[in-house]
Length: 190
Image 1: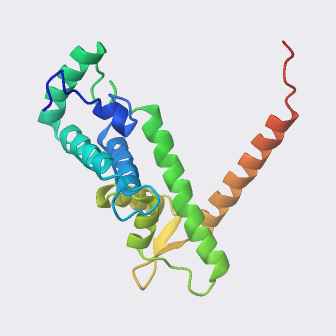
Image 2 (image 1 turned 135 degrees about the vertical axis):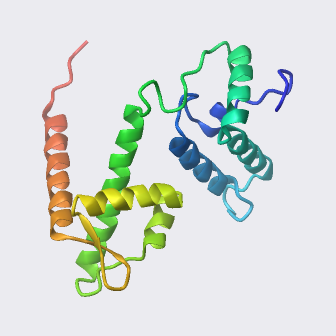
């Protein structure tokens, strides 16, 4: 743990709120680790990669994070909300989950449209596209299966159902209607 002279703001480095939960932390880490990884020819930065890894290793460990949060509060003069917010989940987490559900459905919808007789995709491929952990992907898979939007086919692959296609279409219509309203709304003159 750094002292105040060598202090690095890990939250700022990962561009997350100090009250963020483990899932948000993990998503941010994967994003920046991929960006700064030495194998990424366009954005490789070994020093930043190590900083991002160090930040994640400290913040994902509850004991280390609590110790770091004390130092962070002293150095930045900001109090901390416990991870996950006061009620255990924050609105941003639920919105991020809804976006991931939509992404999964869109991936499966596109596959069904392109390959109607071979519409399945193995879970790890979807998970890789989303860049999430096994546990996070398992949660999203559970939800979408329970809602009847996806199913696991005979080959063990994820495939969109009729209900899932209906959901994608309904979401698409809603977004189109919202966009039309936005373009029709006059801008107030100052």
